Length: 307
Ligand code: A2P
Image (cartoon, rainbow, N blue to C red; front, side, top):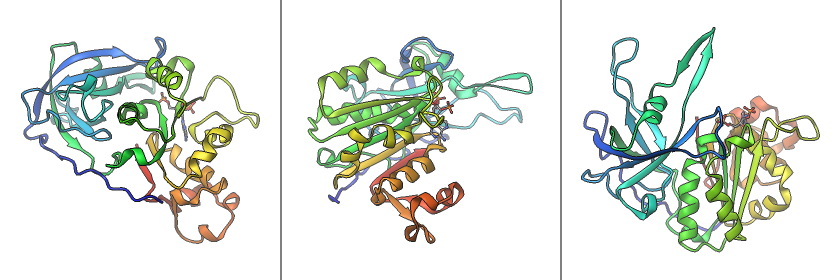
């Protein structure tokens, strides 16, 4: 595989004890259509702080929601993946964006709203927010980014870093292949559809694959998930995954990890994985889910940010 180096990055210029104050400049719904799955694109202005120009694509920004939890302690910091490129949103080094889903849930008949995501989603331009960061030292694009092909696997707001990475790669004039596999429940939940369709129309080397889980079923009755794209879109993905200079990135639900690894192995793409125990000596079709979960780790070609 081609060698790569990761850029050196700034870390924790601001911490929860001494946060910076950012100002909201935009906050809008960024899904295909209005949907019960509410996803917003939120941009912070960090000018006048030492965060100006500091975030690299792939890193996260911390947000300190005001108020206290049920034990009277100040709310803890939440991390959000940056969705703007390293140059900043619209090329402005003082603008940092993120992609936030309004979290809500019902447990035993009681409705709960996510503390920080709802705080952020309710903010208006001009409102001030306490932020920290940057955080993350490995989930980055290599310094020689154009030398590689990329396969990005995202579920839901896991798309955040890939929006910025795709912007950055094509701004650099990448001629290698870039595939984005994006999973969400319904077509209305597709995030950043306008930008991504535009990129697909403009660049033959950009492949945009949507895996919609709750509208249709695969022939065997299973759901369309990001990992099933390795089978369902093998014509597009196999040549890219089989190339020597391809890196893969996963971002989103932890559940996708094992499925992606198992499917890569079934197709013979072992170099993205580190196999423990006796897995390497056995046919991947005999690996159980539990074994795969415990004994497959990412290799140096695989980057993951799952939660
Ligand atoms: P589903 O919930 O239909 O099973 P969102 O964050 O917008 O809810 O989207 C997450 C997407 O990831 C949904 O399409 C969801 O499908 C899907 N998903 C759920 N579990 C897994 C898993 N184990 N592997 C891959 N995708 C998953």
